[in-house]
Amino acid sequence: MDLLNTLVDKGLRRELPTREEALAVLATSDDDLLEVVAAAGKLRRHWFGRRVKLNYLVNLKSGLCPEDCSYCSQRLGSKADILKYTWLKPDQASEAAAAGLAGGAKRVCLVASGRGPTDRDVDRVSQTIKAIKDQNEGVEVCACLGLLSDGQAERLREAGADAYNHNLNTSESTYGDITTTHTYADRVDTVHKAHAAGLSACSGLIAGMGESDEDLVDVVFSLRELDPDSVPVNFLIPFEGTPLAKEWNLSPQRCLRILAMVRFVCPDVEVRIAGGREVHLRSMQPLALHLANSIFLGDYLTSEGQAGKADLEMIADAGFEVEGADQVTLPQHRAEARGGCGSHESAGCGSHAGGGCESHEDAGCGSHEGGVCGTASVPVAADAVGAAGPVGAAVAADAVSAATTAEAAAEAASVPAAGEPRTDLVAVRRRGAGTDLAPNA
Image (cartoon, rainbow, N blue to C red; front, side):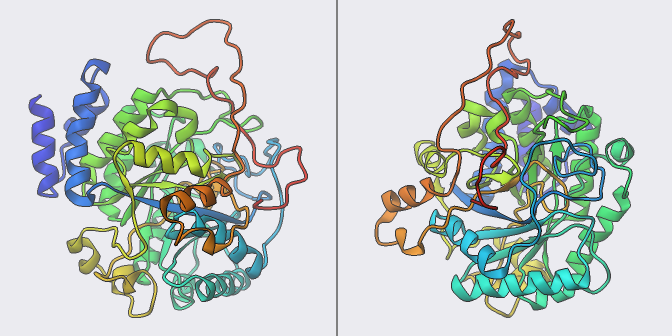
């Protein structure tokens, strides 16, 4: 297919495709899907090899958000049955982070619901960053706290943060239909603040909110212009009790096309499959690893993810390998070119042999970008992995996720046609709802 050959050639040169080419990827047929995945996979392997970076979310504060983001289970007026709690203490957050690190994660994303942090909140998160880094040598930390005020990004960097996540989520033209309590421009401004402070910027999108192909291309082109080091791709989890509860618009094939389009537009950027992959990609998750080079391990902000052990087995079975803490995620030209995390003089991601950090795990979290992501955190001793090798890592990772058993799929009244969303296959599993689980358990 001439289109795919052109896109591969452009991606190898880091040249921006045309809008028409990006739209054409989303319009490809199911018959051509494997060719699309194979073509985008060439770029993924060229820039990132067969490594898969594991990221881990720690939900510092859950629910009780004053913003009205329609996709988020933590939004103002949400009726979703989720865990709600105020700030975790630094030692609690560090203990939670240890579970993901023991399972093979190399980056911890600290997420808090809310419009944005107060200066006191920044102090609290700074203490948490210190606690995590003091107890876990070489760990990367990304903060995801919402809209930043002047000077706050600099303070987070001084505290040891390597990256900051704030997602654009959808196109500028449709943003007002999704959220009214802040603007698209507010989000762009926060990404700029992270860049200016020397933090590695992470910004992504949420697909499946009823947007058009043009909207998806618009937001991905906007992200390319912002030039974040990491682009998390979330797939909407339609939580009951939110305005988008009935938006089941995604099929596995649609998700793969979206990931391929993102890879073609952002060929040398860390592309992370974030919230909703288990719900919408389902058994086709291994194919997505040929497009994205990063995933979350364990649960999301307010919903359960796949068991950590299952993730590690999936990565190995698909012929990929977990990226080590001593490996640099970003290609050398990107790690060295920006004054972001790759240039930090202090320990942290910039201290990796080769300098550069890579991600910004926020897949859709942090400032309400999600309600679609979250965190699993059953404390696991760090020495549960290490000498035990891959088997020990898999055992430790098994404890990472609360989702160790699959719920039975709801019976469907009729079977949808091929390629249509299958809401009968996977139920949204809420973290801790109706249980006595402690925060981040």
